[in-house]
Amino acid sequence: MAATTVKAEPLGQPPEEKVAERVDYLNLPCPIPYEEIHREALMSLKPDVFEGFRFEFNKGLNPQFGLSHSVYMGLAEIPSQSSETIKIPTAQYEFGANFMDPKLLLLGRVLTDGRLNARAKWDFTDNFSLKANALLTNEPHMSHGMFNFDYKGTDYRAQFQLGNGALFGANYIQSVSPHLSLGGEVFWAGQHRKSGIGYAARYNTNKMVATGQVASTGMVALSYVQKVSEKVSLASDFMYNYMSRDVTASVGYDYILRQARLRGKIDSNGCVSAFLEERLNMGLNFNLSAELDHSKKDYKFGFGLTVGQ
Amino acid sequence: MANRARGRTGKGAPAEEASAMKKVKEWSNWTLKKAKVVVHYGFIPMVIIIGMNSDPKPQLYQLLTPV
Image (tube, rainbow over all chains, first blue to last red; front, top):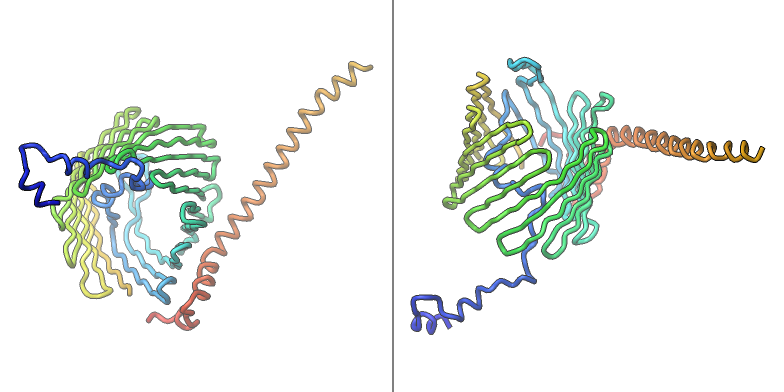
């Protein structure tokens, strides 16, 4: 079949090839979940930079069950009214337990000050799943919880959210072509008496991902990630809030090498950051993090070690 | 006399509904508070129990030793 099309090649494409490329609109792929629409840009541009020393030990008792112990010593920022950031040295220990099954995922992390961060995900059937997320503290009125009910169809996904403080939300995303998916969301927050509606679009090919999101809260977010080669990808991000006239643009790179992963970015707020994760040996990872905020004169450097089987 | 009776029932029904709603709100607040305490103290032990009973079943000492 290929030989005949090559021999009979005119300037345009031969008709057999055109028919093979026609899109089957009844068989589109399932889109990415709505909250992960900016996933590639977020992974490349927002690594979790930290300040101080972080040590993490992950112990797997079972392919499904593991415990984690993590120690952090460094400076924690206290939000303050003045432009100066106030940092207080803190040290904390975090114990975590996680259980990962194909159908059930449970993750719990508890800190020394009593804060619990819990996540659970249960797939009742192939298409329907329930997710729950909670951050519980000992202080009254500072705890949050959220439940999500997801339904995955053949080429669409729908989600309904229920949170504390009378927070209701729903979102829907649909694949309209093999590369393009469009979605929308609506939410209502009872406690703050706010409601909003938003739209998002995502276009992806093997080499690039472009996403855009607009919301009635005044947020416009655009991002573009290009995979330049197997090891390198470049990303850029633009966020604009038309109510508060706040603009941030950032450009970054992501090198995924055999033994290391290096991510760096520069921001329009004068903030430069970099994050390196290096695999020293099997089960031993070394992290270096740096964030230089030239406009606020706030420089943060951190290093950490992760030991895990 | 009939007007006064009708007036009283007219004001009585919305007041009953309001107190029923109040009771439902109080109950739901109470259950949420208790549920929050239960989840706060019991989530991690529950994950550990589910994990220790999954197979291959790990031993108890593996929970405590660092290796």
